[in-house]
Amino acid sequence: MPPFRVTQSTISANVLAGLQTNLERMQGIQNRLSSGKQLNRPSDSPSGVLDAMGYRANLRRLDQYTRNADDGLGWLGTADQSLTSSLDLVRRARDLMVGAGNAGLSQESRDAMASELDSIRASLLSVANTRYGDRPIFAGTSAVTDAYTAAGAYQGDAGAVERSVGQGARVTVNLTGPEVFGPAAGGGPSIFDVLATAATDLRSGNPVQLANVTSADLSALDGWRTRIQDQLSVVGARYNRIETMRTRADDSTSTISQRLSDVEDVDLPKAVTELQMQQVAYQAALAASARVVQPSLVDFLR
Image 1: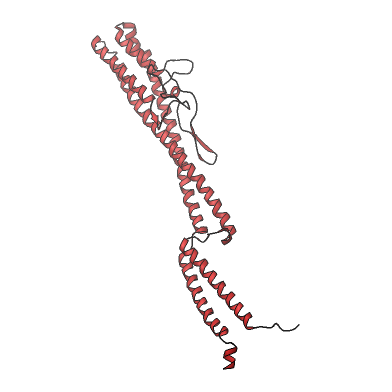
Image 2: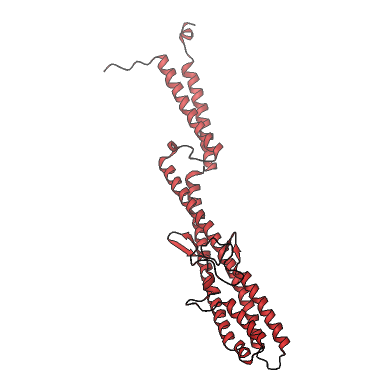
């Protein structure tokens, strides 16, 4: 096989190709330094790009879980405040009804107690119509303006408001009006009916009806007080579950964000060192090229 013939043009072409390769490497490092990312295009690392896409999809999903959890905590936090206020009102109503059993009370005093029970009933109705955002929290999934009418009639539905707070984890974040205030299943009186009946009995002056205030009426009120306490426990358990899931989402977000950074972000000290080494190599290549390409026919004829 005849030897390969090397000409001046071949040497020049090889030298220029080598210099161009060095420049491309320097440009790539400079691009990584200026963008702060080591993945600027899919060709930089196909496997790295796939990993980054997966991490970003996970972060978007976790971000949605976090937003859902925040909204759920808002619903449950509002319900907790409403139930706590309701218990305070019910306790005051109970104190009045127990005090009404005092035989020495005048009818005027009982009328005043009845008026206060009416006021408590109105306050409870206001609590039952508490809103979170633009929705009444005790109206289920109904689009009504208020869960209860002024007469104490429930106008919502039994729908459950749920929030997805994790993989396969959905939590109900609402309570319906009948679960807390009534009317009870089977058509029993609501807590508003109980208070209205107690006020009527106090105003009647009838000994039989007055006795009902501290017996039947009080027993019915105690039943609703227990119901509200039970629902308050339910709200607390759901709140804790969502808070736990939110903490997990935050922890997962931190972990995945670090992995994404490891894949995407440039290692600045390493990149600066590579750039300096590449600059030295380029300068050396220029010096060597100047010596190789410099001789010409004119140089030999001198």
